[in-house]
Image (cartoon, rainbow over all chains, first blue to last red; front, side, top):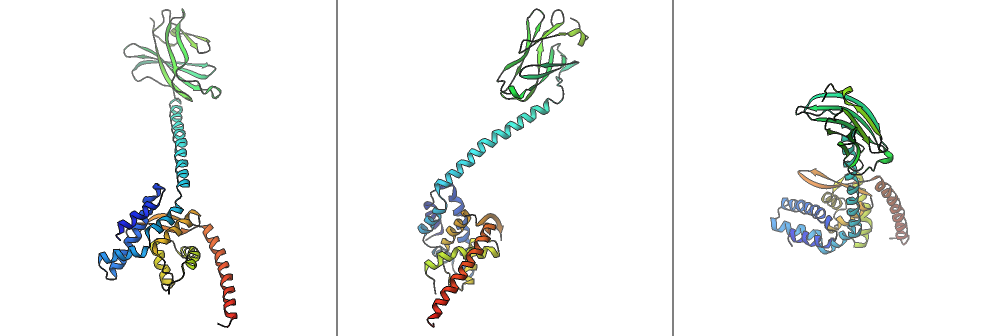
Length: 226
Length: 110
C-alpha cells in the first residue's frame, strides 16, 4: 500500500473533520521518518514505503481507534464554544476600543480645522441623559459659525438611542438655528459641532432635550456683530 | 518473541508515560525507543501508538506542541503534572502486581 492510500483511509475513519489534517500530518511525519530510516538501511524507495506502511498496521483499525479520541460530538461542541467565545469577545473588544477612542477625543475641547477665529464659551449643560460642555464658537474662513461641544453619557441613561437630540439652537423668537445629535447607541462620550446662523439680535438660545433654555448673548463671547 | 496484544495495550499507556517522563518526544522517536528498550519484544503496530497518545492527551496526562526537530515540524509530546502523578501510582500498582505474580509462579518451583 502506498503512503497516500494509508493516510486517506485513516482520514476517512475520523468523523470530526476539523481534526483530520492534524492527524494526517502527524502520521505523514511518522511515515516519512520511517521511510528515511529504512532507506538508510539500504532499501529502495518503493520497498521502504511498502514496509513503513506495513509497520503502521491496518489503516481502518488505526483510524477507528483514532476516531474514538476525536469524538465528533465533543469536537463540534468544542468548536461551537470557540465560535461563541469569539462572538462575545470580538464585539466587547471593539466596544472598549471605540469607547476608548471617543473618551480620548473628549479630553480636550474640539476646534474645527477651517476656523479663522475661535471664541471660548465654556458653559456646562446638565441634561437628564448627558453632561454637555459647550466649548467654543468657531468662525470658519467662509463665514460659518459653529458651536463645538463635548458630551458624556450619564450611566443611568446610557441607552440614549440613535440620533437623540442633546440640544437645539434657536433664536429668542424660537426659530430653529441648528441642533446637536447624539450619534450612536451606548456611546459613552462624543464630541461634535453644530453650525448655526447668527441670530438677528445676537441672542442664542440653547434648548436642552429637557426643555431648559440657556440664553447666550453672543456679543459677550464674540467680537463679531451682525 | 512477540507479546500478546492484551498485555501490550494494558501496559502501553504506562510505558509511553514513562518514556515521556524521561524526555519529551515525538511519535516516531517513541516507537524507536520502545523497540530498543524492549529488545524488539514490544513490536507493536506503529499506527496504534497514536490513538494511545491522543487518549493520553485527552485525559490531560500529556500535552503536545508543534516544534521543529531536525528540520521538520513535529508534534512533540511531554508529560503533565497530572501525568506524573498517574505514572507514579501505576508504577506502584505494577510493582505490587508483578511481585504477586512472581510469588505465585515461583511457589510451584519453576
